Image 1 (cartoon, rainbow, N blue to C red):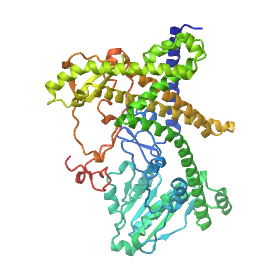
Image 2 (cartoon, one colour):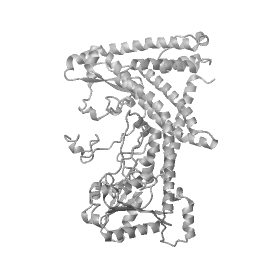
Image 3 (cartoon, rainbow, N blue to C red):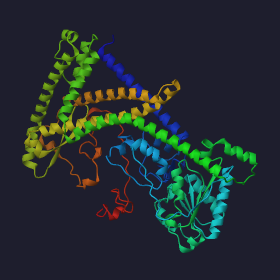
Image 4 (cartoon, rainbow, N blue to C red):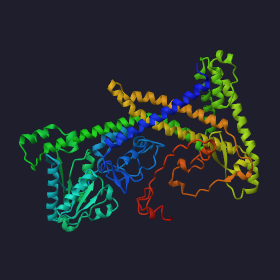
Amino acid sequence: GMPYEKLIEEKDRLMQEYAVKSERIHTINQLLKAYTMFEKDVEYVVIDNKVKIVDEQTGRIMEGRRYSDGLHQAIEAKERVKVEAATQTFATITLQNYFRMYHKLAGMTGTAETEAGEFWDIYKLEVVVIPTNRPIVRDDREDLVYKTKREKYSAVIDEIVELNKQGRPTLVGTTSVEISELLSRMLKIRGINHNVLNAKLHAREAEIVAEAGHSGAVTIATNMAGRGTDIKLSPEVIKAGGLAIIGTERHDSRRVDRQLRGRAGRQGDPGSSQFYVSLEDDLMRLFGSDRISGVMDRLGLKEGEVIQHSMISKSIERAQRKVEENNFGIRKRLLEYDDVMNSQREVIYKRRKHALFGERLEVDLLNMMYDSVEDLVNEYYGADQFENFNMELLRLLSIESPVAEEEFKQLPVSEITERIYEKMIESFKRKVEFISKQTFPVIKDVYETKSKIYKNIVIPISDGKRVFQIVCNLEKAYLNRGKELVRSYQKQVVLHTIDEAWKEQLREMDDLKQSVQSASYEQKDPLLIYKLESFNLFKIMLNRVNKDVVGTLMKGHIPIQSPDQVRQADERKRTDMSRYRTQKSDLPGVDNPMEGAHANTGERAKPQPVRVEKKVGRNDPCPCGSGKKYKHCHGRGA
């Protein structure tokens, strides 16, 4: 066969080629998605030369949120705006699995009844309907159906003008930013004063909604914009017939339509609601029955003529029910895929927690050592490659095989594994003792001279490739003669390795989910293939984590020789931790354990993921959930 050195060289070359090609395929995929599946002013808007995501359900901008894995960059390239730094996902969870983590679940909304089936199926929660405080006197009219969108929008404008003359306030509901801007332009031509509420103009939302109940006021709102704020009506408006709701299109979900209708007729106030529909609307085109268009053709309706009948309203509701069932099916399928991820997530987060809080860290490390040895023995056992096996042991785990070549061929796998594992533990204990002894004189010197100034110290430890800046408590390190430093090193290596591997695993699982979908053409269940393939990916990832952690710990050495090279760890500002959860970047030394490594090895730095978080403004609601403004709550002292 091929010499070992040549084999390793060829393997590295192929891996590099694969990495370049897979990255190109991924980039082309994301560009195709950006051009074909994402529409401006529907899924996103461009404000101040920045692409901002719009929540389709609420019509609001999702500040600080960016699509991951290069999709946001592809959309930025499409819109010819500045392409920002790429973000990569550190952790994912579906809302369903997130809610399942709570032992008790409850909620309250005005429109839960239509989703009662889903609440029971996913969370085993019942929906109880509470009757209204006062009887509803709102006039909910049957839908008006037009042949084309143009006729429909003309009729909507005529109705707004008529209501304006009567002195009634009007709230017009649209399903996208694009439609709200179109109606706004049409109203300007007719000389009607109005306000627009959409993802682009959400800053004055509360102010606009407060004025929406005044006589003759016209407000155009996208989806959820303006909801959750009561529209107060003046006495003359109540006499004129209350707030008029106009829906320019039926939404995919009955809930959103009901929320729009529910803006009028609150607390027994008068009001009316009317939906305008055309056969060109997405809902009617995709899910509406052909019977409606057949009826309209038979009636021989001329341009601008309208049809209004309970049969048609029921048909539209049936179409919405179809969409809801379809969407529920998608969510349920998504949950089935995430349940596969969830089992992996639990294993990884348990290991991470053990490392973070020091629980069972030693036990986990011993298990990693045993698994690494067993995996290597299984890989080479039975093949006549003892030399290569010994080289791999040296390269990955820094030990020579205590088993001779003849014994390797004759002994069972379990015995070979046990003997190598025992030697490894001895070597590991010696390494811990050596690092402790090597650093203790330095720690002792710093403690005796600077313990009043320094609380935590930073000592670099290298594995020959990278330099980890290890933060440890000076007093503890002095009292247990340097062992605290080794413990901090072990902790940081495990955390860093798990985080890097999990980040890659998320990317690979995402690619896998997309690639298995073609299995349905072969009459196979994509979910089943996803489960099998993801298990193999997870096994490979765990083996890689084990070898990386053990290899790094076995090769660790300290380049510091004198107390002058020890520096104080940066003091972090004290914060009320009851309001925050630990994040990876908040842990000392985990920000960038690669710091200084690339200078030593000449390696090119890997692009670091950018953390994108929303900055809380003084007048924004406080993130603690109290409902108060930030400046009156936790931002009082800021």
